[in-house]
Length: 429
Image (cartoon, rainbow, N blue to C red; front, side, top):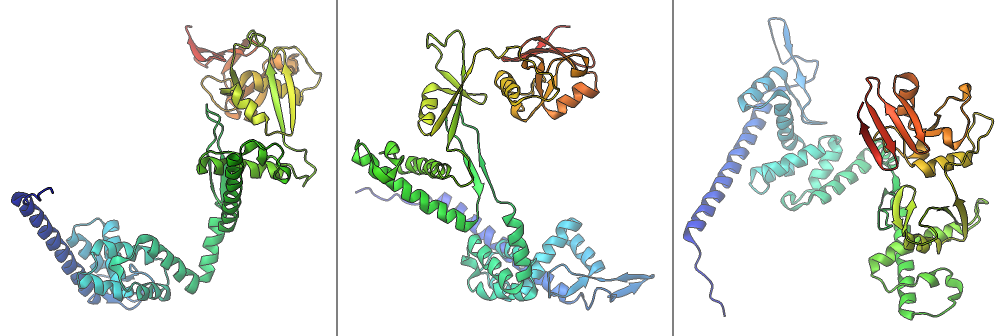
């Protein structure tokens, strides 16, 4: 059995000294708080419009710095107190307000501070959180803080929320409606491994239902994975093809996709079932099979990932792209959808130097203006975001199409860049 080593008397002495310093500092701060409260009692003003003192024609009025229901304190006297405390006007007023908020609106919290059971910094934070509450709501919080030294911040926030709902329902409803408007759900573009991050803020009932549905489907996926290959799974539908012996976290992520596909299979609004569009680019490596790279929008992914995604689709549309530089003009100025798709597949982003705005969100600019005979054709259409479209139209920024997908830009002062599928490259003038 290992023998306990004797304590290091030097370390023990230092720790004891530190503890004594901390206790002394807190005791000093408690005395400071008590003095501030006594000072405030001597400088109470009955009403904001009632001067506490007059001199040379100036009225010293009362200030509400401690919250609803607390007395007002003399404005000029507060200036002096803050100066003596060595604090800035704004910081000093906030500090004194928290001290007086405890003394006048939170008597149980104040008693715990004065008895040394609650550190002043914790009491100050409680006073700050309670400051916006009405007098009745603050009293409710104080009555329930029977052991303020042990309460956690999450528990305190729940208590404050209950106080608002109880004593200020109009405010509670307004805050609930405001927060409800902040709900969102974002799904990021896939990364290089074909995975996408999801983040969101949901209504609690919606979140619970989503959680329960995911748990149930994840359990089914696990059961199917443990059953091995069993052929037709009957009413379980596509779950049979996704049966997984993977970890619970992986199965939960798969379950969310299954829920989405189940919804897409329902003809709720006349929309077609889940359809995938596959744009097949014919290149010099197509026939040899030497290129394992595919793309989701402009992001490179593996062709194996594409195969897995296509397995979940009910309809697959294969769109061969033989030559994105084909010259297929139309007579009108308006741009057909097929031309827009062709330009987006060719250029991916705004073609201004170093701009990464996606082509799908850009305007399509006629490189040679339509009014001057420029055709409405992919070979004469260039994706420009609204800002850079305006720069080209209303300033001296100019570009030339040297070949489809390659552009030479010239700035107002003569600097030049080449923009193509490899990026932006400065050119010597």
